[in-house]
Image 1: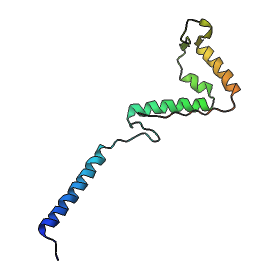
Image 2 (image 1 turned 60 degrees about the vertical axis):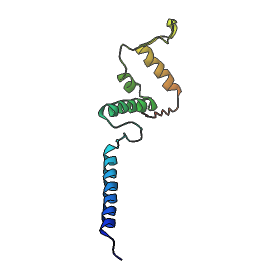
Image 3 (image 1 turned 180 degrees about the horizontal axis):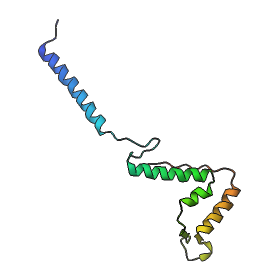
Image 4 (image 1 turned 45 degrees about the vertical axis):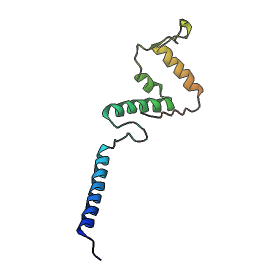
Length: 114
């Protein structure tokens, strides 16, 4: 009726192997920034925080906050030789003032992936 020594040792070995495997796997798991697929590192967290600050500023139409994130030397040439569509810092400010005044609400979603 009793279990043999060999059966007991076999079950203990199996249990020990399972526990050790689970511990090793738990040690190998990566932590991710909440609501993202991005590994939680100091650099990644800084990037996500910056992007979230920008995203929220756009949704709130907070021109001052957005401009605080833009270089005063900002210049965009539209990717062509036509200078009429070029935009500098002041032009960007005027563009945002016009666009944000015309919009009732803005929803801006960013999906963070590896």
